[in-house]
Image 1 (cartoon, helix red, strand yellow):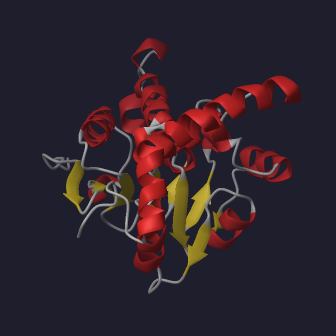
Image 2 (image 1 turned 180 degrees about the horizontal axis):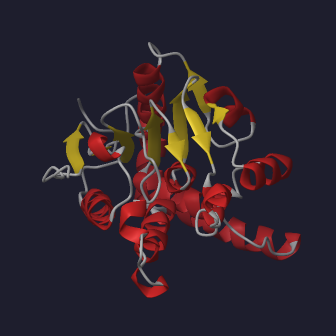
Length: 260
């Protein structure tokens, strides 16, 4: 039996970026209770660290994430399933006030795709593969549908959820699962480019913009505009907004941009 490493989700912070690396290649970074617990803890640490502006979620080994650790589900009752810890993890990623970027250099399956969809931005290799394999195991992509369905086009969702077919990074970008699919020599640069743009945003404004993007259902236009005018005015008058305006006029980076 393969002994798990002590640190299943490595955590590093540099220049305002917290990098969390799924690190149990021997199990294809499957979502065991231990890995999910550590990943949740690392995400919490990133939220609590005022120096962190952006989180990057990546992986060690050739596989991003194989999905739920099925060895923990074998013979377990419904109340014991590891899947019960998974919704909290997806919610933590989805609601993170700090933008999360997924860097995918290898296959992702089932719950692993749910993690990617919960991130704000995602970049993968063109050769990376993805699949919603649940139906082929007699189970449902139920929990991950909460993060995946807002990303995918409806036709693609029907096809891929129902067939369980494997698709590559190019298709993933076409249907909205990831932002970009790139060559092997471009992945780090593409990830770094997204991060470099994100750290320029005010941390409070970024968190509020995430909330703005995820309003559902949208209210009536007149009510919506009235509320948005008030929100906009509050941010213009805020300390962060005023600092951004001053920095723009003085042709300098705002105070919140991390210094390398």
